[in-house]
Image (cartoon, rainbow, N blue to C red; front, side, top):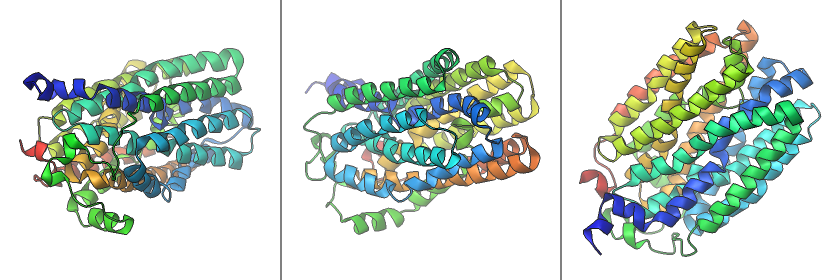
Length: 418
C-alpha cells in the first residue's frame, strides 16, 4: 500500500463508502430534526391554542429514550450499523406522517415526539458514527466533520423550504414532505453501508490491529462496568449535560425564541439558516482541530461560544443583525457539539464498546436536555419570556466548557499519542 493510501487523506479515499453512508444517514436522520421541527411550532400553537409554557414541556419526551439508548448502542456493537439504521429508516417517517394527522390533543403530540426520538435514535450518531470509529484513526476528526456537516447543509435549506410549503399548502403537507425526505435519504444511506461491515464478531483490520484498541468482546454488564470505571466517561457526560440544557432552543422552541426576541417569521427562518451555517463551520474547524490539538482544550473552546450567543439574544431585542450573528455563534458550537461525543468516545474507549459508551453518553445528554426543557417551561410560565432561561443557560454552558479541561491527556487511542 502506497504512502498516499496510508496517509491522512488516503484514509478518506480508502473508506469513501462507509464515510458516504454515515454522512447520508446523518443528513436524513435524527440530527436533521433539530433544524426542522421548530418550523412547525408557530403553526401548531396558532391552530391548537397551546401555551408556550405547555409547548416547552415537549422536551421531557427526551426521557423516553433513556431506557432504549443503551440497548441500541449494545445491539449496534453486536449486529452492526446496517440492521439498526435500516429499522430506523423505515420507522421514523411514520412518526412524521402521524404528526400530519394530529387534531390538537397535546398528549398525542407528546407521544408522537417521544416516538420520533425513540425511532430516530436508530439513525443517530450513536449508530452511524460507528462506521467512522471502525474505519478511521488518523483522519477521524475530519471524517466526523464530513458526517456531521451533512445535516447542517440540509438544515440550511430545509427550514426555508418547509416554511414555504407550510405557508402555501399547510403544515400537514409540510410534515409529509419531511417524512418523504427522511425515507428516501435513509434508504440511500443504508444501501451505502458496506455489506462486510464489521461487528464484534468480525475483526476490523484497519483499527483492531492496534493492540491498545483491541480486547475481548465483553458482556453487556461487563461493558457498562468498564465504561463507568473510566474518569473520562464522567467528565464527558457531565460537561455535555451542562452544555445541552438549551437543546430545546435548538429544536421545537427556536422559532418561538426568535419571535420572542422580536424577529418576524421570515427573519427567524433566515436566522435558523445562519445557525445551520454556523453548525457547518463549527464542525469543520472542530474536526480539523481535534485531529491536531488536545481534545479537552478543543472541546472547551468550541463549547463556550453559545454562552456569548445567548447573552446577545437576551439583550438585543429586535436587533435582527445582532440576533442573527448570535445564532451563528450558537451554531458554531452546535456543530462542534455533534462532533465531540463521537470523537471523544472513540479516543477514550475501545472499539468493542464504542456504541455502548456512546449510548450512555447520549443518555446523559438526553437527561440534561430534558431537565433544560423542564426549566424552560417553568421560567416561561413564571416570566412569560425566554430571557431568564437564556441567562441561566449561558452560565451552565460556561461551567460545562471548563469541565472539558479536566479530561486526561492519555487515551485508549494510539493515534492521539502520535
